[in-house]
Structures are given as C-alpha cells and as structure tokens.
Length: 288
Image (cartoon, rainbow, N blue to C red; front, side, top):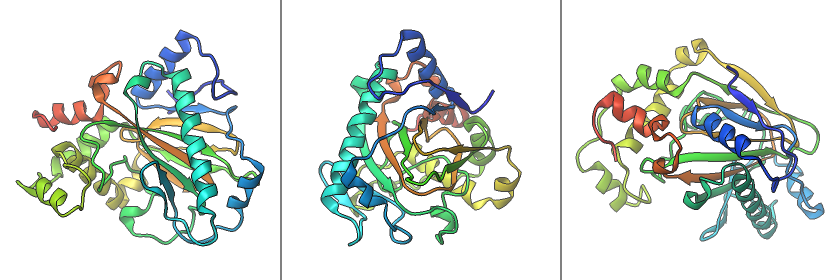
C-alpha cells in the first residue's frame, strides 16, 4: 500500500462525511500520510513579503501563544509572522475539526512553524539533519506518550516542491534500533527538569524515542539501504501525519508552514497502534 492516502478536499472548513472521517483516522493511525493535493493555504497580500530572500538564518521560525515569535531575524516582521502563523494554527484546527472530529476535544496546541530556508545543501549537525530518515521526538519538550500530529502546507511562491522521503514502518524501526538503546539513568529525568534542560519530566518513553531518533540518523548504512518512497508536495498542497510513527525526511524545499498538535493516546481509535504501545510491548514494561 502506498504510504500516502489521497483525500479530496479544497476547503479548510469542508463538511466531510462520516466514512471519509473514519478512513482518514484509520490511515493516520495505520502510519500513512494523509495528502490533500487540492487544499492550499492562501497568503494575504502583505504576507508575500515574508517569502522574499530567506537564503540563510534559522531553518525554523516558531510561534506560540505564550511566547510569541522566536527564531526570526531582522529581515522578518515579527508582527506579520505572528499573524500568519496564528491564522495557520486556526485553519489547521478547522481542518482537523472537519476531518477528525473525534480528536478535536483532546487536541493540545503545539508550536506553529514557518520554514523559510531551502533544505537542500544546508550545513547542520547530523542530529539536526532532517534530510536523514527519522521519527520525531522533542529533546526539550517531552510528549510523555502523547502523539505528535502535524499539518504541513507548501506555500512556495514559484512552484518549488517540498520533497519528502518516507521510510520503514515504526514496528520495523523499533525492532532494529530498540535492542541497542541505552536505558535511562535513574534520576536523570528529574535532573534535566531541575536544570531546565527539559520543560517537563522526560519519561522513559521520551528517552527511548530520542534514542530511536538519534540511532536512525547516525546509521548511514541504514539510511542508504532501508526501503524508502519519495514524494514531492507541490505548492498549494497540504498533508497531515503522525510524525512520531512515520519515518520521514525532508530532502528539498523552501517556504512551508507547519502546525503541531499533541493527542493523548487514549483519544485514538486504536491506542495499540501508538508508538507508546508498540515500545511497551517490545520492552514488556510501562514507559509513562
């Protein structure tokens, strides 16, 4: 089966029949990317100025309601960025309300992001190199088992695609890398939180997910040999994915928006398909 599931929508507030809602939820929980090729995010006239230049600087500009805009340089208007990302957050929530209404009461809003810089050719450390296949885990912001649900839109003004690579199912990733993962040190989670290295307690689940993230990126033989699928998301397209379970890499592209939502495992239709449940089955112990 293709790692992408095509959903035909051209409105963020579209009315979706129950069958389409159920199919979308199953696709996501089964580890597929839900692709909406007819759904674009339209910029306002003044927002097009944010797409000028951006050949260097931070790869990610973020916005959160309590912290405002972070990571932008002098070339970007902070107020304009905040308005853009806040509007994208609202529209992504509207989309999820249409497609995944059962999730809506449980969703917790995470960061909004604007990715202004070309991915290809960008110099970075191997751990931060998103051109390598990985599953998402947040070093400073533990999810404590919650799912990472992300909505992406390509807003490039001149037709450049955002090229992704999709890798092996999570169960195969865990079977390969979990046996060699180091166990967390007793007391380490409390120390990390006390020193403000993490914003909340890092659970054993978060520890092992970081181990998988790093082990995948560090293993160049795995990166070269694992089965993988390429897909180019054109401007004017949107896609939704649980990035904690889908092996993915962003190879090329500039100017994209992304909204993160956190979902408790208990809100899933099938909690047993969560990475938390899969890791707990393999390790035979609770991780939260």
